[in-house]
Length: 324
Image (cartoon, rainbow, N blue to C red):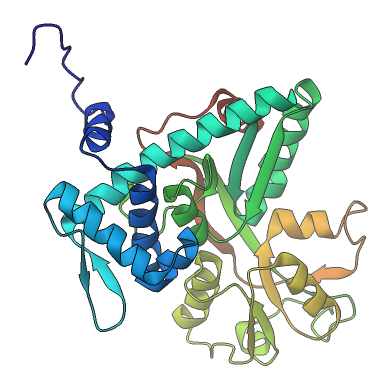
C-alpha cells in the first residue's frame, strides 16, 4: 500500500465502489446489471434502459471484458446472474442510490425545496403512524416532498432493496435474507372482518367460521401475511376455506366490493375504525363479531443495512418513532 494511501475501514463499500469505477465500468453498465437482476431477461432490461436488445447484449459483453468474468448465463427463457454478476448488482444498487440522492439534493436546492422522502408502508401503520408523522414534519418543513406507497410487505421489501424507498414500515418476507436489513419492531397488527351495513351476518350475534366460508371474500394476494393468518385460522379449526375470492391489494377496491355486495374482507382493526369514523365512510361498514382473534405478525421500521438515510428521510424516520 502506498504511504499516502489510507486504509479503508473494514466493511466499507467505498473501496469496492471506487474500484468498480477505476476498472472502466460506467453508470450505464451498472444500470443494466441491476435491470438484468430485476427482470431476468435481456429484452426487458433493454426496454428499461431504452436501448435495443442487441445493444444490451453488446453492453453485457463490454462489462464481462472489463471485469474478466461472466456476469450472466443464458437460460432457455431469459438470463440468470452469476455470483460475479450478483455481486456487481449489489454494489451497483448502492452506487445508483447515492447518485439518485445527489440528483435529488441538487434539484431540491435549485427549486428551493426542503428535500424529499420515499416511504413504503403496509396499510395499518400507514394510517396510524405515517400520516400523523408526515403531518407534523410538514408543519415545520412545508416544502418537503413525501412520496408514500401502500403495498404488501413482499412488494415493499423488494422495492426497498431496489433503492426505490428510503425506508418502509412493513415485515421482512421469509424468502429474503434478514441480514440485508436493519429493522425495529414498532407495532402489532390486529385484524377484523368487515361487511356492508345490513349484511346477512350483521345481526350482532357471534359468528362461526362455517358461516363465514359461505360468502364471497376479498383477500390480499396469495402469500400476503394477513391472508395467510386468516386462512391459517380456518385450517387450524378444521373449517372449510372460502373458495369464492377476489384478490386485490387495493384498500379502495376492497371497500367498494364490500359496499356493493355481500362479500367479507379482513382488514386491520385500526383501518376499519378509521373507515367507520366521521373522517371515513361514517358507518357504511360493519365490523363482524367473530369468535376468534386475528393477530398478525408484528410490523417493523425497516431500512437497508449500512445504507445512510438522507437528512430529510432521517427526520421522518425519527418522527415515526415518536408516534409509537
